[in-house]
Image (tube, rainbow, N blue to C red):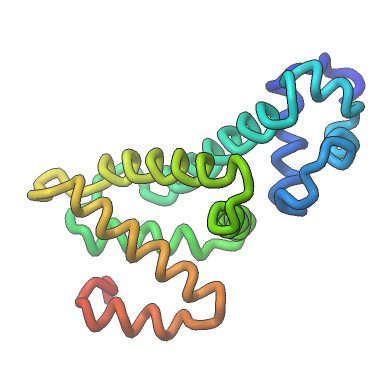
Length: 182
């Protein structure tokens, strides 16, 4: 990092890697600065304050996550809601996506605990996720807005159940609703 001029753009990748590995609990200025090969003063210089740094960092991480989802969706639009669901769940189960999900659940837990900034971050991330999901709905879907909300509920629940050892419960629930794609 010493040969590259420091900027928000050069600092965000190592900061993101650190947060994805250690979570937001390890997101105090000194560990972040160390991960980026700089000082905490330089982080403040480039981001203004810790709140802006974390906000920009979460936005950057959300962009990486979105790109991963886009790649998993492929170039052809899904023909059914079931196909949308199956593609997203398959991508969400990929090992490379797990750190993003763990971070997401940390944000959700922080929001539930009332930690300042977490509820706003979670709300913004959900709003963006819903907008993206609406664009993934089948072209002839009669209610892409409602369908996106329905699928998001299923996706969040299914991935969370899998993370806590209840993938079978999720699979059986999807089968009962005839949305498993099987």
